[in-house]
Length: 57
Image 1 (cartoon, rainbow, N blue to C red):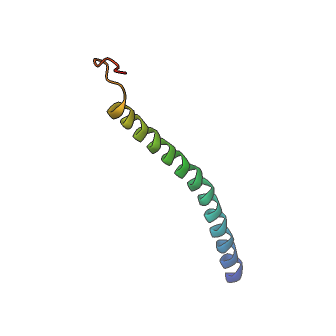
Image 2: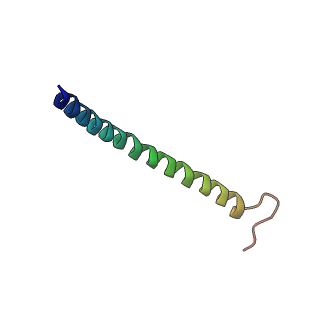
Image 3: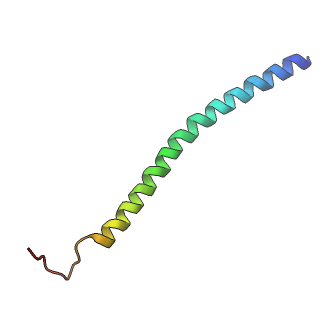
């Protein structure tokens, strides 16, 4: 009985590790894309054209 419990726990642990990997990778991609978008917005506000200044050729 002890062997069955041990093997069942190891199998469940492996499944949990695989499921965690399948959740963490897309979550990391979403976090990275969100961070890049926020940095891009900040850069656009800092270096974008100013509303009051006319364009000079």
